[in-house]
Length: 132
Image 1 (cartoon, rainbow, N blue to C red):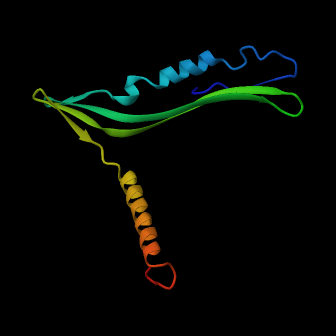
Image 2: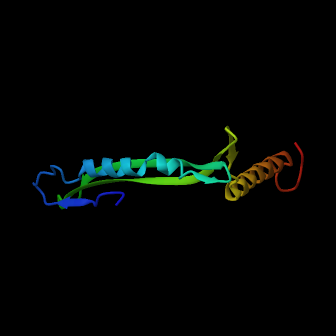
Image 3: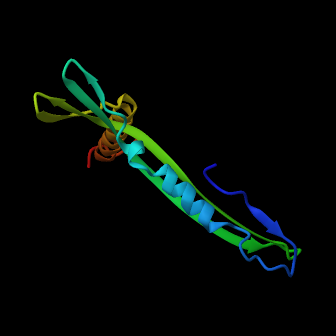
């Protein structure tokens, strides 16, 4: 129930509250709670761990009319969360332990490799290998 359904009306009908903006705002508020960022604290042997995440989201809405004069409008939002790390509390001291994201690391390494290959290709003069 993250986004209300798109509503379609007949020509000449007032859109009024066809798209319930209140429902959209309520769903957004419910999705963006602090529990989505900080997980439940875990305690074992005097050490407390509080997991944390990074949230990114977007919201949109709109309406329009087709060639037959039918109107419709709607809205929605999306939310992406990924682990960021954890706060560890031990003997009264708080430390931050970042999460390691292998997929992100591989993607970054691939982007650097492509940029390097592009640069080397430009320096060598492309096919034929003539240096400028």
